[in-house]
Length: 385
Image (cartoon, rainbow, N blue to C red; front, side):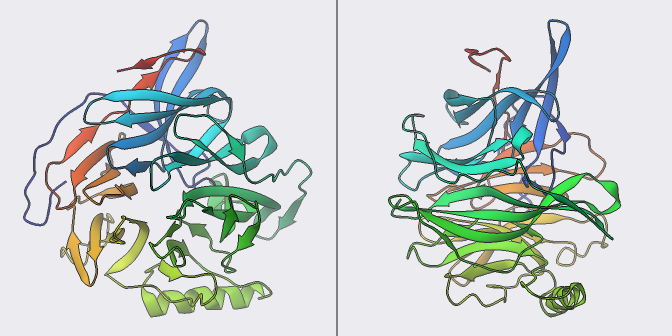
């Protein structure tokens, strides 16, 4: 990892062994970093869940124990990578996906995932784990599966990727309406995503987009609390035939080269990227002053062959765009701190089995490798550094 001038910065090593495995990739749009151990006579797995959030000096992550498709126990943990202080906020038998702080740091939103019920619902609680509330109540116990020429399809309501409005009165989130088999037999995925919001006082839910995106990122409100930003791939529209949907998606790619970042307001939702920068601009997150961190493919701008594909992070402040990393590899789960000073991301290179998490200053300097503390598999276990 480098900044634009190739300055390595100060790279601090914190030792941990993490192996990447995919858990419902594309379904929950997050990865799980696996470090295995043995307890008693059966194998346990410790997982650190991706799609994390970064509130100035605190990172939220989830540590779970269990098998690939079954969890015995999960904890939502707040971790300060600079002081190494960790605190268990909440414990449950289900996943607590995509956790994120409110803009004032007083509350946390997350998706409570119940694998056995094929359900994911948006919840909020105080930053200390108290006053837990479930905001959506969607379950798919009786959902029917349909065989189609492209594989099995199931209609669902699956809620994920929440974030708060700036005034803390609403939560914006993504909802999938379909679960389907992935192409070439790579398991199942949730798809047909759109953006919704819920009023925390009235609990009223409002749909903000209607494009059934193939995949989607976490949405964020801007400081006006009206416009929101997200990235979505392969948009479609209700009522279109399969052929017309394909035509719409191919036309979009021809026009915009897979630049997929949208800024909408729930009313004037033009299907046009907010800005273009190379190819595959995606995964935006925002700061308090509305600067935008985003991911983009960098093979062309670096004069490299098309494969292996390389991605890097960029920061857009007003009309100026600055390069934050020069990774020559893959980057996932980027997140910028609310104060805009630091960037968190996961990176790996082609052919490597392990990936690593990093924090870097917004100018690309002082790169620091981060390892999340692991918590034991038993209830009541403390954080292990």
